[in-house]
Image (cartoon, rainbow, N blue to C red):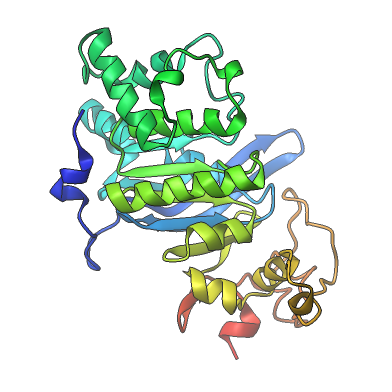
Length: 340
């Protein structure tokens, strides 16, 4: 295997370096018996080498659909997914193979994402064998041993011949990470990859992913519904907050978490549990006008969030959908904030 820590291509990214993976106006509309469902309604995102972009929002807001389009596991209804500036939909077979190597996906459920009849050795080495990166069982065993050690499954020899049912959820998810690393990816798309793990195991896995980001220069599109996890993992990166298929706030993590602007982001931040009882009593509590999320088949006119928004202004918020525009240190989609 190639030692990526010695590869100059994985040095610190330059500020002017173009994104490895970019989404440009991607939309995904599902045809259902109840009508068209706009799961993703025009999203622009960029993932750069060695950087983290967290996509945050409630369940059902379109995060996973966006992630699947970014990985080319589903084609967008409209818009483009670009890899190194090239539209994935227009790639030839060789370009598509390079894309498949460079963009890897870690699924949410470690109990379902691994083949139950394959050992760890077989699972992690499958891609290496398929693409001719190893020759023979001995070389495959050595390569997989290195990968398991890199994701902190040690001693690796204890795991090589185990089956998924013989490991814990955290161990299985580390195997999934090792499988992704086997292809020397430039970007890893992690779809709620820690949500099914215990808190202590979750932090340990996030630390491992952060180390891989720093050592290997891997970019992350990290999907989560938990702002606390996003804050921990992407403190030096960015957060994009999604609501009903649209990004409503996007900016550097410290600014978005410590000074949320969009009313929906403020509501998410206020819902995060504060373990310090003294601080918990002084925190702002955002009260929404309604707890009901609009039906995607019958979205309200104007801003999608206005039926729940505490900052709602009649005649503006309920007539025109706000665009996502630059406002100081971030992007915002809110009439009240961007027109004031």
